[in-house]
Image 1: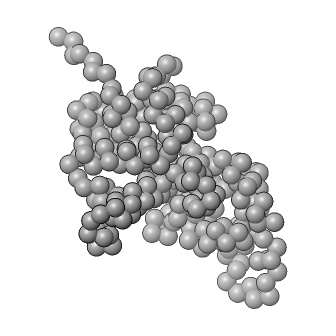
Image 2: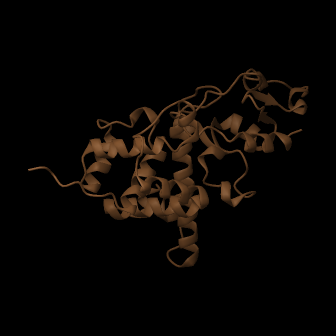
Length: 254
């Protein structure tokens, strides 16, 4: 007998999108442990889940520009979820993590690696803090995975020393808080320089430093930081930085 194909639900599309954001691009195949794990949660084949993730690739502007495609037509559900994320990334990201906790039988705090000792016991303040921390965890994972967990300037590959740095700061534009194209994977020192607007990127995504930093008389220890000036970033495999956001950040540095 031929197996009956089961249509993907919206919740399943959201969970597939969640994994699409979190998994490095080279692991979107049926042998990847992450694909196997989601397939078990959904009761679907690993091939079906891998195909769904690859179908999300056709909606990613950076991957489309590189000629990477999923199935020619894909599914309406993929488009709807992608558009919902573009319209309200904070809500969709949180919903995807909530669904992951529900389907896996785990606590939301565990999914987001939150130390519950740092949270109020209960109430609206706890709910607010959990939502913020969940979304911050989602953003960090999405950005670092896009760069294969390597600093886009130095190639440093120690996760504990990497930061998912916002191009437009978290507080400046709520709509961009969860946008992976508003993120860069930087080591902690270059992230600090970027955050303090002592470092920026030009339209060719080459590293530039503020003249004030380069003119410091005490340059001890600065050489390592400044040696990367003029070099292009190591491009991500998905979620390429938004050049308009890069330009807005650079404008605030000059």
